[in-house]
Length: 69
Image 1 (spheres, one colour):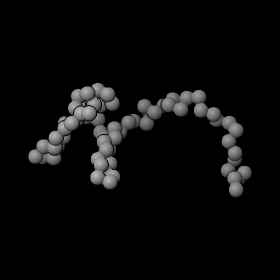
Image 2: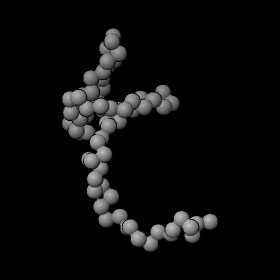
Image 3: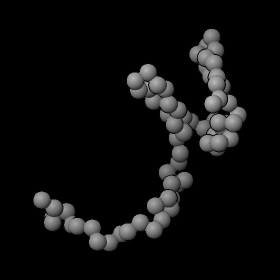
């Protein structure tokens, strides 16, 4: 488990092993989410990078909105 420390200016360094694992690049933006005392950093990904991630999904056989109760 990687560890880091908060500097006097409230900055942190993300350890190299973590940066490499998630593919972070200099200048990339992260979303900061705080919930129940836990801070999570989530990389902002361009929408174009999501292209094709649901390849093979079924596109037919869904009920039409008018058929729903």
